[in-house]
Length: 306
Image 1 (cartoon, rainbow, N blue to C red):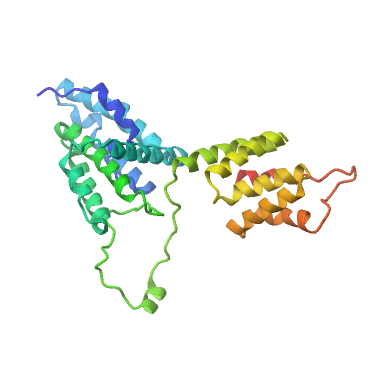
Image 2 (cartoon, rainbow, N blue to C red; image 1 turned 90 degrees about the horizontal axis):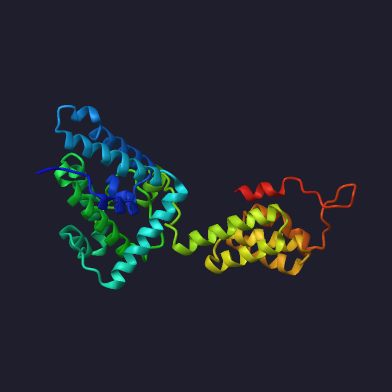
């Protein structure tokens, strides 16, 4: 059988996790470890004596699929957008009733919820072991990983948080629990990881980023419009309310500024921008002015780089 690169595989870059061969829960260390492993498997030196068609295939796989896939997932912002896109497509596929083509994905969908994580990790690990070590298995293995990721998103969409994991398997609920006091003394602290963003979170952040630009150029009306859109999409972010409070403050709308500063502090009691400017709109405290009677800017826009 002649092995050759298929242009259809380019479409798989929508799910770079499947192309690389890692779970969507993989953290940065797992990603780079897997990428290095795949790059080693596809290194041209391993195929010096191989058929020219095989040498061409591994070159195409590395340069047109694996390298671009890793470039996408190693960037934090791109990674978040990719996870959102995979999730949206997975939910749409479920809504449209699209049939699963691989047995392993169907098996994942039938797992009890308590076993979903461990089954998913085990299957991704097993499939990725042959994904690039046996080039004849690449197509089938990657298709299986794409469907596994989609089903995993469908099953986990209702959970409040996901935790990127450096190793694979999570402890099962049946594991015995140690004495709580001993656990407190000897267990390593748990790192809290933000949830995978929704599509609204991503778009809200874009409105916020534009608002920061407008605020830095004193385009207050445009900043207000962008921040209102951001808050409509995500009401839980203190940064959006704090910046909107500041913009209203600059427009001398102290009542509106007070509302949003207080909301920012309700969401995050340590929000620096809200803590700094709330006194100016609650106690009629005048803003600090310089010798020319204008408000000191200091380094206000340093806040916006957070």
